[in-house]
Picture (tube, rainbow, N blue to C red):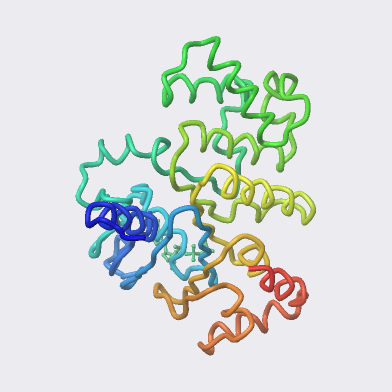
Length: 288
Ligand SMILES: Nc1ncnc2c1ncn2[C@@H]1O[C@H](COP(=O)(O)OP(=O)(O)OP(=O)(O)O)[C@@H](O)[C@H]1O
């Protein structure tokens, strides 16, 4: 069969679009108020529809890298170099107001302590419906219906009942599911999960990780996952970046990195996990 030049071009264009990373970070540098550089030239790619993990010791720059992507750095902390692109949009070149509009609609995040992101005196359903009104533009009644649907889709049983509950009435795992629902209301392309399951007990953590995995698989959501726990990264991510002291010391397919770490620090990290049951980590890694 012959392929006309036009269709060949079309095929190339589609293939290029698929293979281009959704998120591309190049030479990212972040400095804190006293001028100390805490992210020192990070490069990373997150392919569309994939899950990429950032792992490394406390203070290695994982969170500030994510916050730089979100455009949500703490006061006094700033990007001092590099480029961050989401698809064709160079985020680092956008004014703050445009970046704020992209949060929720194009990229979103969930963090460790879900309760602190909710208003304790408003029911979780009303807060979710509010996000649907503001970010998606739904009318009051449609927002309520969609909120209940989303709570159900997040694996919450009796979603109408959950809708009417206050944050203090829900467990940590349930609250994190509500926060994930809020994060994906406007169908962002990229979801950043920064230690999102760290505070949960092991069984609930596994269930929330499964939910994130399903969202990736069924809705084509792209995930960037930060965790100090290799087992979490191994369960979710095809690719892992190992951070140390503000830089990436190793990257690669999770399975390869776990089975054949090349950098001494990665080997040390895996040895540390050994004390907590590396079999759990390796077993997960073998599925990726
Ligand atoms: N608001 C801030 N002001 C000053 N220094 C900060 C601030 N936030 C983070 N840092 C410093 O920047 C460095 C990187 O922090 P970051 O939170 O990105 O690390 P991390 O790898 O996510 O660690 P953790 O797992 O503990 O969250 C650390 O040395 C930290 O102390």
